[in-house]
Length: 229
Ligand code: 13P
Image (cartoon, rainbow, N blue to C red; front, side, top):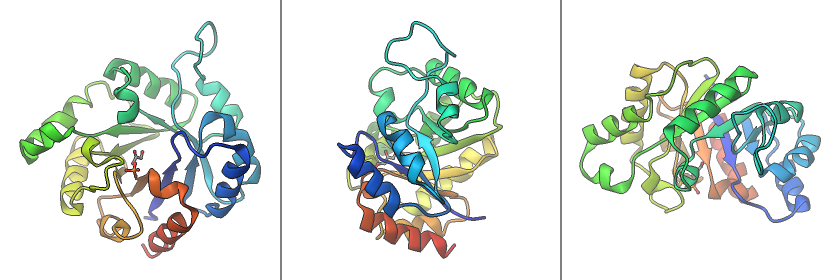
């Protein structure tokens, strides 16, 4: 199966012009670009090969929900994928219950939902089995695995420059797949130097990339590597 690279730009870049430039440089098949909401339309307008994703979604269709964006609004912008439960949002107070509602709302309108799961450093330090039990708890609310992708993103590896051991990531991916049989991505401090080590694992369907995805040259290198698989 083709490996897919998901570029989570987070709250970057600062301007629409920069976003469009980055989108043009990253526009290849098997890449999914996930810009901030205000740039979705401009990015969509220049994409010829890559798919479009969003960084979050709300679970209601419309109404008095200040600051939220509905699944239907994303669909109308031709968004295909949506990230839910990223650790950077869980840290702001998002609960498993809210994330479950977002997953359902997203898949109900046909969006492909990327559910992020991963353990904090304290859990990781306690050993492998504990990591797996921790992740399993985040699965309590998964009802429907249609259109679901799971991204294993150890919290201690996100934006820290410390990636997981690819062998450990593959083991966790296998564990996840033994519970829900869906594609599993790895995310956390990936770059052109370590991408191959993750992508060569058959259990890992692709990467969810943060920092390296807003560096066009670095992302292009990673795309070249992914094409070999
Ligand atoms: P980094 O690649 O910057 O560690 O971020 C990973 C991530 O959070 C992707 O969603």
